[in-house]
Amino acid sequence: MYRQFMRLQQLSCRTISSSARRQVDNMVKEKQKLFQADNGIPVHLKGGAKDAVLYRATMALTVFGKYALLVVQP
Image (cartoon, rainbow, N blue to C red; front, top):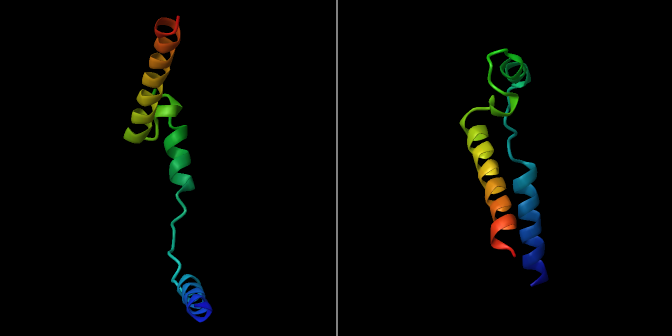
């Protein structure tokens, strides 16, 4: 049992340490240009559709929470 565990541990270390690293492009300059552009869109919505969905979900949960706090509880 111990030998099987040690083999598994050694195999997992080899797999993780020998995996090739991906090259990731530096996107900071493009993101800075996007968020600093003066196009009339609020900064919390400049990220695209994902930001809009998160914003709407947050607002819906806020309204629901206030409703539950004021109306549902005595």
